[in-house]
Image (cartoon, rainbow, N blue to C red; front, side, top):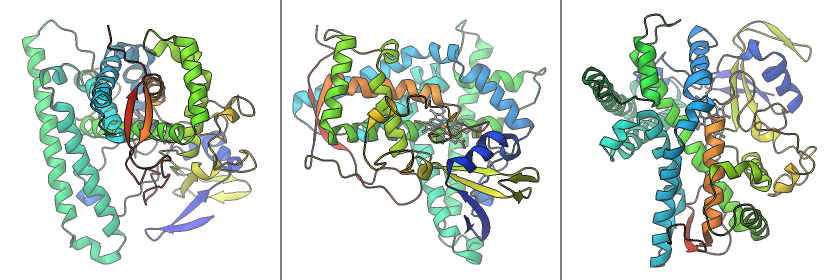
Length: 438
Ligand code: HEM
């Protein structure tokens, strides 16, 4: 199918067979990104520095290798286990208190803070310990950038008048991005000063690795300060709300499906027992939890559209595809295909234990691709899965959940293409296992 977006033709792929041609067989020919710009670039002070939106070339390959071998490699993620544990305990503690006081909580907000704090501490390490308000400062700053980008994208579809920025959102976007830039420069300076003072403490956070790479005169590629700032921004944009949304949808579906919740709790109780909190090393022994996470991502993928641009003339299914052709792979439609998934609109985790056991999270089978597939697939899969699994397991192990309004969560989506929840997930936590009790 072909549609027009911003006046330009875009090919939309909604079947797994053609998706396989693009994301697997001809992966390298389609490894560039189709950028949904709507003319936003003149309001983007970091224009041309993106990793997520970069074309398939030297910069993307360099950063992808850095992500795979260092930034998001298994040993590096292992170093952050204490951060994930601390943040999970902080969330549970606040929920136990809420339960004691009989107060409801906006669970979505709590989970977003958890996802944000973890990524913030992984990226900025020591600086977060020195300034406990830093994660919230960063979240607010990035939130403002997201808000004006969304407002601007909306007004940009109105045609020629867009260049006058009548709404003023373009100017505001530039201003909030400069504020973010100032925050970044201050952090870079603190890092550089601490290097000069040499506190003797080895830094292993992600910003240190990036700044070391920036200084490394023998590196294969000289990355710039603006590329680091943009990468940092994009890690938050790509990693926080996606992870938080997956956890929220899973909890909402479990509240709406008490039999599934009960079965998961039985699995956790039988594997972990009733005297300690579930931990990361338990996850590999919780197959029903894994099936629930898969079913959540199938039904509510936070990245429903995969963007690609053809970077060489090629042929797919007998059709000639020209260089520069823009493609959207509709992962959502593929994961709703009734020929593959029986009753696709229902939440049935068992399907991943019986019919689709072989489907992994890495997009090998093109019928299940919540993290995309091929070269441009998500770089944060391992991190996202650890946080998602442990958080869902501990929320179900420690609490019963009662919605503030009604017995069932109303599964409505916001407008736009992110598949986010329209209504806040407000509920009462009722403690069943208190991990802080002596
Ligand atoms: C449940 C959580 C997440 C989901 C469902 C998700 C999903 C996705 C999807 C669908 C894509 C596009 C893949 C493609 O086009 O083939 C993507 C790309 C990306 N994701 Fe994630 N993501 C999640 C978490 C994260 C996290 C935690 C991080 C980093 C900390 C991250 C960083 C990225 C980056 C940098 C890209 C761009 C990769 C590239 O262009 O080469 N994501 N993600």
